[in-house]
Structures are given as structure tokens and as C-alpha cells.
Amino acid sequence: MRLKFAWNAGVATSVASGKEPVTGLSLWLRLLGAGPIVILLLLIGVLALSVPMFFTPRNLSNILAQTAVIAVVALGQHLVILTRGIDLSVGSNLALATVLGALMFRVNDNAFVVMATMLAAGGAVGAINGLVYVYGRLPHPFIITLATLSIARGLALELSIGHTTMRGMPETIAVIGGGTTYGIPNSFFVVAGVATLLFVVAKTMVWGRWIYAVGGQPDAARRMGIPVNGVIVSTYVIAGLCAGVGAVLLAGRTEAGSPLYGNLLELDTIAAVIIGGASFLGGRGHIGHALVGAVMIGVIRNALNLLNVNAYYQLIAIGVIIVLAVQSDVLRNHLEGRMRVLQAARVQ
Image (cartoon, rainbow, N blue to C red; front, side):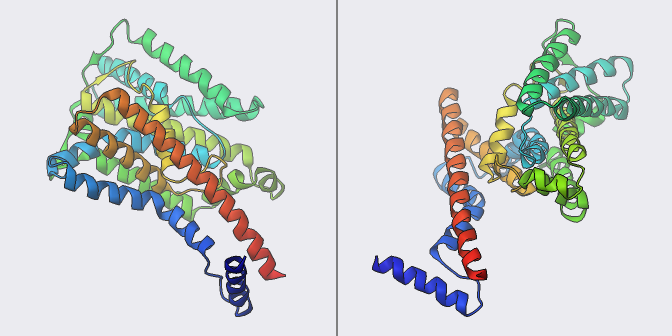
């Protein structure tokens, strides 16, 4: 009781002085906000000391190349989750895009035409998800994106004419997806470019503020005149386009298209967003969160591979990390609620 009284007295003193109260609660919030980055840096430090091969330039380049597809698709998934949505179709969408790109390559070997085909395929599936969810008045996007997950995978298998791998991609796409510049994978620059574009758009355009408003309080956003339906559809279109970009990177790295690509990619991207600190409750998150989460997944898997850990245990490790990330989100919501109560008391 004495400690509780002293803590409240400290808050009251800060309020009386007109300063933002600095309490153990606010410190916890700051730590939770920076938690994913801090954990990633600590993880890299520990692995650099304990795994000899980890911190070599070649291995770091491999991590960047291996996480590029997850990272770029997670950027689109992040926008969807900001609006309290989810896109389960991104993996099948990517597979379908690579198959269509491989088919286009057979009739037209122009790299830009092949890339445009993959991007258009990804964007089309994303548009279907958004339009059916919003204007079909579905109770949750889980339904339509689960449906397109199955439909897109089935189309990819049908169009691949019995081939699990369709070899051949234009040289330009191979360089983008599998080449390096000064030892850095070119796919890293693509991810950085997409992330920068989305960051600038989200932070400097009204559309970006609309996304946070729709995710935070959709009913209030509608009363304010924000085009909620259009904002939601746009996030699914962008998620589809990001899947198309991921298809270009993966097809370039393997120089092939396949209906088997993107298996469980939807889970990896959702995990990346949540591990990075975004919330399923919507309205909170940062583009960098998805990148941090994707790199964390890549680092963990790379380290487990270097340590010859069974692939099944790798899945268990990722699952445990997701649970811990979600629990951190629940704790953060509780602490933020406490902070709002204190701030309301301060105003009074």
C-alpha cells in the first residue's frame, strides 16, 4: 500500500507541475514499443557470438535474400491488418502470379510484360478480396480470403499444365530476384523501395491517416466522412500488388514459376506483422514493424538451420514467438488503457 501511495503521489506531482507523468507504466509502454527492435538486435548479437558462421557477409546476404519475399508481402499484409482485416490468400496469390508470369514468358519474353502480368495478377486477386468483402457485406475478410486462397491455388495448379515447376524467366527478372550489387541482394533494394514508398504515402498523404482512422474507430471514421469502403478495398489491392512483387522476386531467384510456391506464406507474413508489434485490433502499427518481424523470422530460421535443428522444431519456435508477440500486444493494450485513465484524471 505504501508503494502504491508513493507511486500515485509521484503521478499527482507530475500532473500538478504540468509535465507528462513519468511512471513505471509509461516506461513499460516505451519498452514494449521498442521491444521488437531490441529483441532483434539482442538476437543478432547472441547469434554472432555463439554461431561462428552467422555473422559472415555471405550468410547475412543469404538472410536478406531469403527474407525478401516474406518482407515485401508482409508490407501489404500490414496495411490490411491496420484496418482490422486479414489476407489469407497472399501465398496462393503469389503462386498464381508466378505461373501466369511463366506462361506469359512462353509467348512474350519481354521482362516488363512478364513483370506486369505478375503484378496485374496479384492486384486483381487483391481487388476481388476487397470488393467482395466490402460490397458483399461479409462479416469478416477471413471468409473471402480463405476462399481465394483455395481458388487461386487451384487455378495455379490447373494453368501450370501438370508441371510443378515451369522453368524460364527473362534475364532482367533473374537479376532483380537473384542478382547482387556489391554483395547485397538486389531483392533487398526492391523491398527497401516498396517500404519507402508505402511509408511516404502512409505518413504524408491523407489516405495514410484514413487507414489508421478506419482501423482505430471505423464507425467514427464513417461519421467523419472518410470513405471507409474505398480505404479498405485499397489496402487489399495493395496487399495483392505486394504479393505480385513477391512473385517477381521469387520467380527471379528461382528462374521459374510454380503452383507450389507461397505455401504457408500467409502465416509467415501475419507472424511478421504481429511479431513486429502491430495489433490485430487495428489502427496501430508502423511499416517498419513488418520489416523487423520478417527479418526476425529470417534470422531465427537461418540460425536454426546453421545449428542443424530439425525443421519441425523451427515451426514450433515460430509458433511460440507468435504467442509471445500476441501476449505482448494484449499487455500493451492493458497498459495503454491505464494510461488513458491517468490522462483523463490529469485533464480533470
